[in-house]
Length: 343
Image (tube, rainbow, N blue to C red; front, side):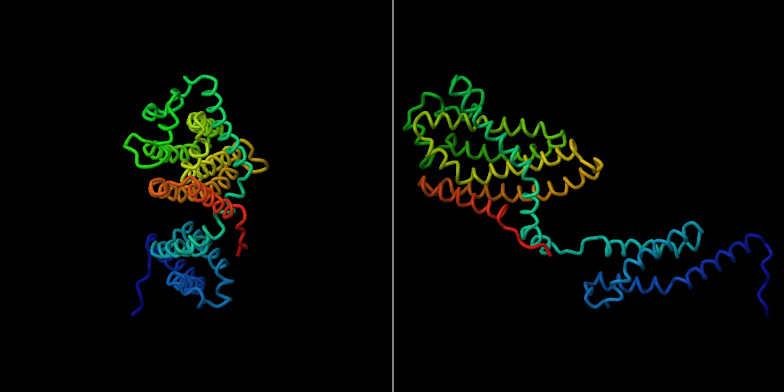
């Protein structure tokens, strides 16, 4: 028995659509199946099992798949076919453009050269940040040296008990060594760490305002430290105070320097994009700065551990210097001397 003829326009349109969809599928289905098999193998971690021809054909097959999906959508082909093409396109996209690096691989890449390269790439911004921090410390020292009333404006009030202008050498020395009560210099160390962590984040975030607020923040953060340095220097305790600060301070201050440099790097890209568009310049600077800030987080964690244990357990000024500046030397060697070859 012959099939009934299609007389209505609707039935004819449906039949034509099915015919177009079948013909479209038959012409291209081989490439889709090949790409699907390749993507499935890659998703299962079997990339090495693909032949060289398959690897070379992957970008071409992906582009052809995009063309097929576009035609299928414009021609209003079978909804099931379009759904299949969309799903395959999404899976193939992550294989072609997405990262396939494990967390362990990312860590090896990051600490094995990625972080140090990012830090070296922003060296002009680091010099500006360093100048701002030195200027802040000098400014704090100079202001208090000219008028001791400035000390109470620059140093938080909770640290102005024993550590005030006019305090005896013995009283100040006692805050640097031995066990102290809850209001001792140990609290000041905890304050410095918490404050420095906030300053590091803010110095980076404020870089989007062309870097100017970042510079001002770096200067402001250091004036209090400069004032405190003046206090101990006035009683001949400069070496002892810097040694106490060095155990964790070298890492903390370097972290702030890097965060400030990362913020300035973004601000510089916005202010002076060069031949690039602002969006492109910001994207490139943002990726580099994000790598630097990931390193800053690690450094602040290390500084917290050093502050929490080293300061209380180590009572020798010489050992404090050895630890503080030994660790600083390691950081600097990693950032500026460690130059592994890029794969």
